[in-house]
Length: 289
Ligand code: URA
Image 1: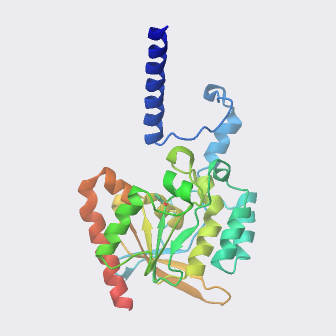
Image 2: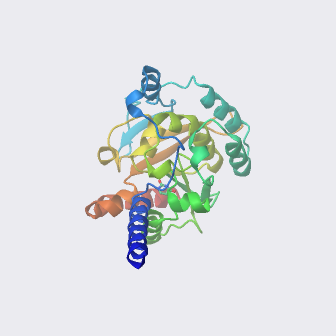
Image 3: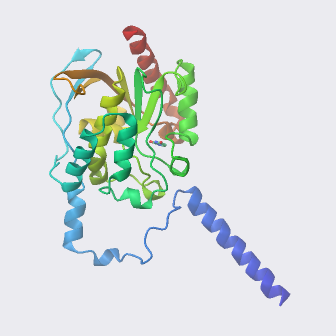
């Protein structure tokens, strides 16, 4: 009997260890009660995953070393004719302040990530900041606490920013392309990103920063519709153009993409590259102030 219960305890310890291993690896969400038979997926499912490869249009001019270039052609198929995108656009349009934008995002049912997330992760920092950082999507800690970039990659970012005189307590604003965590930290699909883009654009309009920094390839792709690799495009400044709220004017925001801090944690040898980009951000801010 004793042998049996100690064996059971041993077994339980092994299961607990296996569960912890999965959670540490990011697989910490049970999505469906019933397992999906992926072998039985129909043509319709395949078609809908293909329609996932669509993103909304943006107005972006690329330039490098301060030399304006002609508008870069998108390498992604654009399709904004879906109902969820239109609903998001309407909700975004009627958001005249950051608090109303947050409220309106929380009413939005057009992004399936909402159903598996614990909290809406909106933004943090100074609403009058000169510089706005945009990441990809919340992770586990962000989802748990409802605040962006508070996990290890956020802590690394905060540390790096402190060396160039930037912090969310003083002079930056930070948010993500997606306000809800993708389960298990998987990459968001293009459809999920597209349905939330009107909110991201409104967020930028409301903060109206003088410099925009995109953290990682996903944020770059979402804002530019360009799927070129982040290691090729990082550090190259370009113009992000947007209408000024309640004025018949447009605002041009100097924008740069850099490596995501989570990538730096995995590839420490890339620290040099992100430092170079952050110094370039510091210099640009010094020039506009
Ligand atoms: N990674 C992101 O892109 N955003 C967060 O908020 C946290 C991690």
